[in-house]
Image (cartoon, rainbow, N blue to C red; front, side, top):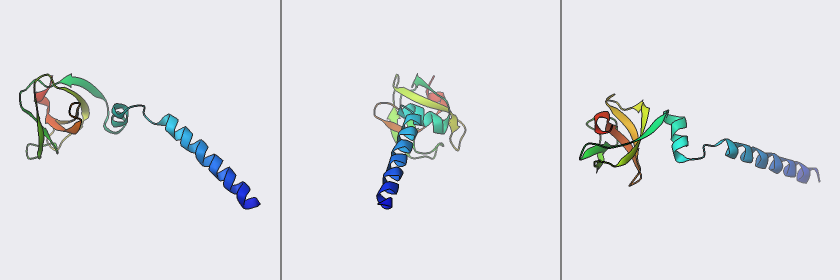
Length: 105
């Protein structure tokens, strides 16, 4: 009998903790990334063929090319190996990587 009572108390406590942590979680993907990578801002690419790279340097693998007026979110304090590169979120298609800070306004 005591085992069942302890089990119910444990399950109730675990459920309460899960609900508490869920309410503290960021409400969006952008907020979650801001928690990890610092402040962000939405802007647009202004260089035709700007490279989205896997790592923050000119030797990083090119994940794709971006074009004028594409919307991105820039994480201004997350720099690459080369400090000219910032971590970004390309909105369409949904991709993450680095680009040279001269590629956006």
